[in-house]
Image (cartoon, rainbow, N blue to C red; front, top):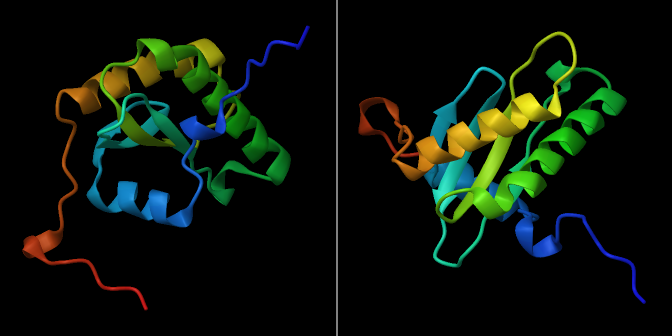
Length: 133
């Protein structure tokens, strides 16, 4: 009998740099006390997750722990989240530990905010982004 798999499937992850650029460039943002969520609606059902943790958060061990907590919160909440989004979660720098229950609560709030419109990405004076070479 095969063992049950509880991880986040590959189909539920943002994996390529192009996926991240697309969400950052065209997505809406929702800000919370612990996290910033950038979300872009999808045509396919379900959500996909990307995590961005900067070096402001400390050494690699701490950053990886933050990523694990964010992925686990998403994995547990994914079936109940409204809409269908590609989501990038960015933790805000802070002292102390991030608790899974707090992250789950905030994730639910932020995705609901994205589903109701979020705050659109604004560029100063209606300017266009520079093209990358």
